[in-house]
Length: 184
Image (cartoon, rainbow, N blue to C red; front, side, top):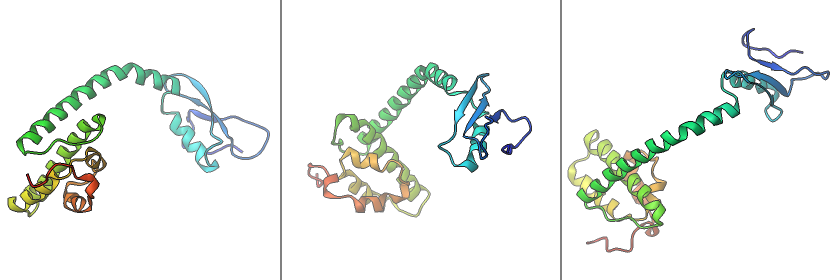
């Protein structure tokens, strides 16, 4: 029994065998020109043909890895430049708004500073600029944010929506607050 394909020109062909059932091995002609036999036995039978078609529109694993590895140097350089710009913006922002230095492992400090900068500036935009908060209410929230100096807390919140910051600050524990006097 031949599996259905979406088009008569599919580049994925099941390997014929004598036993009935859905094939587990498929020969796929990749756009890079390589023909590879893929073992799809780890996938449910009803998803093998579709996955084989998906594979047929992508380069084989070896070509994909080679392309990724040759481009990694420029990607790493771009990422390093982007991180340096973000770090500089976070440091300038922290100075301007009198944010205390973060605490934690050195490896986490820069990431935490960038995360804090992004979350607090996004919160300001959502709550004050686009929302209904006034500057007095925002100043009180900003003071509460200053008391959280554990870099890991800010990193953990990096994907949070800015409008959630008040609730996140309420949920913070004493472990997230620094050893400095919060009432400077």
